[in-house]
Image (spheres, rainbow, N blue to C red):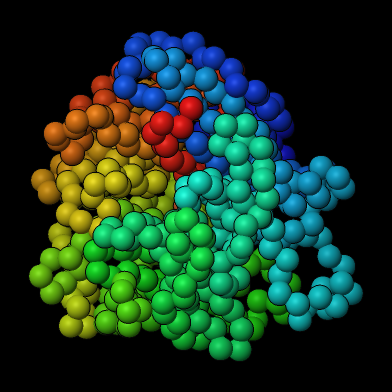
Length: 477
Ligand SMILES: [Fe+2]
């Protein structure tokens, strides 16, 4: 029986971040310590899991919790906050019946053996619990997860508007990219079936019209949470964490538990031409696993590709809620790595790089996505496998890093916001939601991105469970 979050609600450590938040607030002015930059006029939108149980049953995994949207709106040196559950089918079912009705990443609905057999030839009923990331497509704001159902919402009221046309597969990424030259949204999906494929597709910003530019056979599809893009190519890093598609409906197990670690496959880097969709190269590399790519760019006849790497896929098991709520169990360490992917198809090599712990990486995306860059910001930890608690900045050209931390506090993904008329790449601020278990609440932290000095903080009236990703939208009030 999983530990329910009520048992950890009173925790004075990171476990508070895995306890449910019931309170929804309409736009509320937050007290500010320090001074928010006057030029900060826009909105930080975030999504993340906020309810970890349904009736008496708990979800199994951090990635399963029911999605909540959070909104921090900045204007004239002030900030207001609002939060609201995403009104997804999964959420409505839990509210209505107290039961888990849709399959999540690592939790399935309760089914009798009879029902399991009766439904075993149907695809899993994935919901629209979009708790991973947020993207703007034209006028639409979408919450995303890895099921193919994006959910549109109103960025001002956080009202859920509904599911928009799905991705062309049963599983996709919550990390689409913008093509650096055209600005088009680019993504990929895995289509499971007797002949499974990866489908790389673009979407028109205004019409939402989708165009599949590449279909590539994937007899054993890999779990790929994100991918890389450059000015001319996209790269799917096919980690050796793979699934037999036809086994999924028969197994009776939640989706992710069907994947297997097969290190002898190594990692296969599939390089596609962004304009034509042609497969340009398949390059073999060492076995490893990653959730997040940082950035990539062309350099002569190779692609330089940076990501947050784990030695294997054990991190997925380490993020089950039972384990996360057990004190002092170390987490596998993510390390920033740089790979060189030769366009001629030779083996991939790794550049020597200092061992720096980094997750939830952010860059100055608008200026440096798919192009050479210098700085990445992310979460870091104590180097002993503790839950990520600090903000780390890495100079990927110099190989050095710096940190912001506060004892007992846990910082989330730092979103970079460029200052107006910025001259340096790190001229701007970082926005991070920090859990402060000693007080029992969270605060929005604003750091100077250059020196990681604190500029301001604004305390929220409640705790915000650990989430994943968000975005800053300038001019959105
Ligand atoms: Fe992610």
